[in-house]
Structures are given as C-alpha cells and as structure tokens.
Length: 273
Image (cartoon, rainbow, N blue to C red; front, side, top):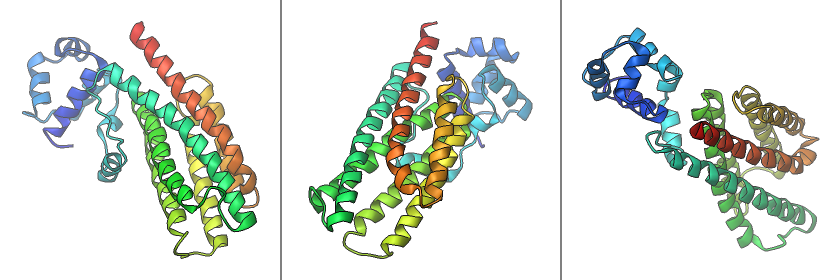
C-alpha cells in the first residue's frame, strides 16, 4: 500500500479506535511526530513500525489490504463504509441492515408464492409487473441486509465474512436480474436455470456458513447459524432437496437479523463501558 493511502488508513483506524495521536504513541513506543508524518503521508514506515501501530489498534495487516475488485464492488453496492464516522453512524448502518433483512424476507415469501403460482397455472398471482418490481426491490433489500455483514466483518476482523457477503450480493443480484430478463427472453431452459440457481445459492450458503462459524466475539449465535446455513447450502447443491431448502432459508434470514441485532448490542455495550 502506497503513501498517502497507508497514512489515511492508519488515521481512520486510529479514529475508529478512539485514540488521539498521543494515546497511540503510548501504546506503540514511537514519537508523536512519527505518527503525524505517517498519517500525513510524508514517510513510508518500516513493516515493523506498521505492525507495531496496528497491534496497538487491535488490528493486523489484513485490515490494510483491499483488492481493486473489492473496492469497486463496495462502491457499486453502497458498501463503502466510512470508518471515520462516529459510533452513531455505525449503529445506523446496523439498524438499516436488520430492517432490510426483514423486508428482504417478506419479499422472498411473496416471490415463493408468485413462483409457485406460475409453476401451477402459467401466470403470476399478482401479475408480471408486480413480479418485476418485486425482483428489483428484493435486490436492494438483500444488498442492504448483506451490507450490515460487511460492516460486522470489518468491526470484528473477519475478512472472510466481508468477502463472502459482497460475493453473496453479486450472485443474488445476477440471478435476480436474469430471472426478470427471462420473463421476456428465455436464454436458458427452466431446468438449466433451476440447477444453476440451486448450485450457486448452495455454494453461497456454504461459504457464508463457514464465515459465520469462524466469526468471533458475538457468542454462540453466529456458529449455530453458520451450521444451519451449511446444511441448507448442502440441500441446495443436491438439487433434489432445493425445493425444501428454499423455504427453509427463511429461518436463516431470521437468524441473520438476530446476528445483526446481537452485533449492535455488543458494540453498544462496549461503547457504554
């Protein structure tokens, strides 16, 4: 990472931690002037110095790394979270995440009803225009829901959770958009799309489950949810059990909402202490 990008990142991490420059130097045994020059981008510090600073901030080198693809995806899906904002900003993002999760769950239930009606009668219960609009708002709700997990991964130092949450948004968006386009232009047979849908969602649930299983700091809820997600992911991949996995995934969305609320409570308690 080049200057002044490195300096800006260290500045953001320090402010997120709530340290002044004087408080930081007490933790890592370097001069205030050195910190000032690093944050201003005037010098390129040694790796040892960077590690020392990050250790004082309870961070590691992974927190300084962000691939160009990840950066572009964050911007495209409103995932670029400004770490220099105060704690009320972070709480607001978490609130948006669980609210979007509930709305996403409601939209998904309507989608199941519409899909079942279409399979049985050849037409949608509320009409094709409603189905298209439902698909669009579902994309947005799901994106903002997963956005909260990007933030949780940032705050609780889980690079895997951040990455998988972004990837989940991409996969969900592409499949949902294709489903809308397919109403007018059938590029794939229904059977082929169903297999693709089941396999991709199965992989995403497996990866997201592993990420939650490895998430630390939020008690037993994320690991339990992770195991359930992995089971549902396996059901999707078997294709035959996908018809059961789809409605069962509603339970996962409920648990995801609870994880976001748990993260909010944990962070609020840390701030109050």
